[in-house]
Image (cartoon, rainbow, N blue to C red):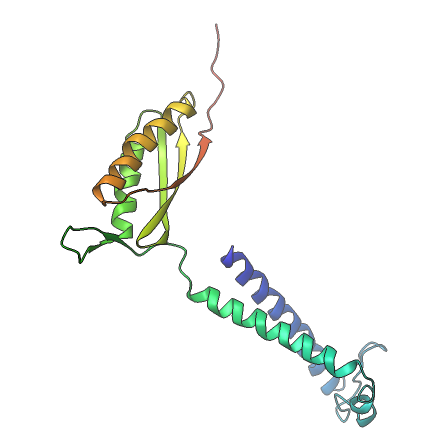
Length: 192
């Protein structure tokens, strides 16, 4: 989601800057510009004194300006904070029995979960991502099922075997898992 928002925001900002910059460059170079364009020559100013003073005496002007700027600042802060938030869990806190605990790399646990899920009957491919907190991880599992696999059986074996083994080996009380199933594409079989 964040990747899509970043691309859309950067694309829109780039498009606006390119259009405005090109139009200002054209007007500054003395090239013909459309009649509706506010600047029409190299000696023209961006905002005249009358335009700057136009809304100053209106009672609604400053609250609207402050509200719009506050929304822009809040959106920019949200975007900045979202850049540092990791979707993938880097490490899992494992109870080692000594009261200290040990740290297990999240990628290692994901790899074990993936390989055990792929070894299950009816599973063509698996992708696992750990999210949540390091003391309470959650698994997101995407399974690509073979054409004639039973989704119920694959889900039951995944939760009992792969997720159960990962939960027990990490010493977790629970390991919630969100599982998404897809069927592999296959050609029609010929009946004779």
